Image (cartoon, rainbow, N blue to C red):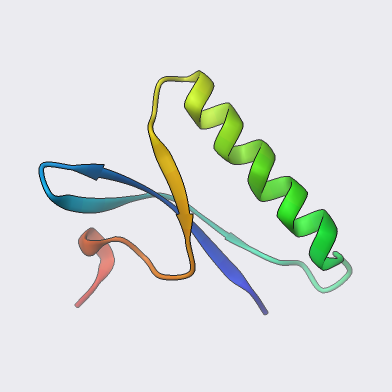
Length: 61
């Protein structure tokens, strides 16, 4: 199961905005398109986000 995180960087620290997991019946292409749509939506809201395979600093132990 693939997980992608949307992160934003503020004051030198990355923060997790959202976490998405690929569904079993979802193709890789569909998942990539879904993530791309989520990034564009968040940017329209004014958040400067980027995708990452790892969570932000706020969720690391």
